[in-house]
Image 1: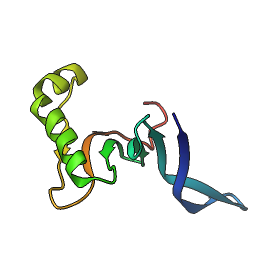
Image 2 (image 1 turned 60 degrees about the vertical axis):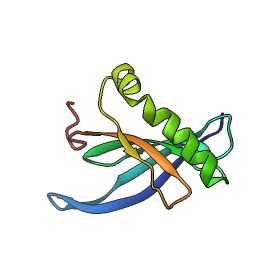
Image 3 (image 1 turned 180 degrees about the horizontal axis):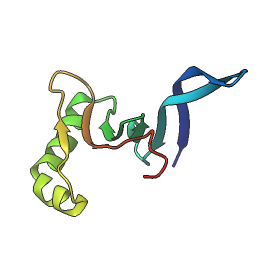
Length: 114
């Protein structure tokens, strides 16, 4: 398995404490990308300040092969969602090469207590 971590962008803020001025750098979006043992099929996790998105992408060189794989999983979506424990977003992207199966969770990324 291959693992890559990217910091997609960051934001700076000025913070004043009395007479002192500080510059903080806040990472806005992080991306963790992991390959499967099949070429062009990968998992991604995208983190920002209010949401985590997990994506499973079927993007081999063959549109037909991607759609066959996607349809196979889609036909079993109830079983897969039951095992996963939450509904999934099924995006076939009919006229595109890649198809996606995704889930997202909303949270307060600024709350260090949670």
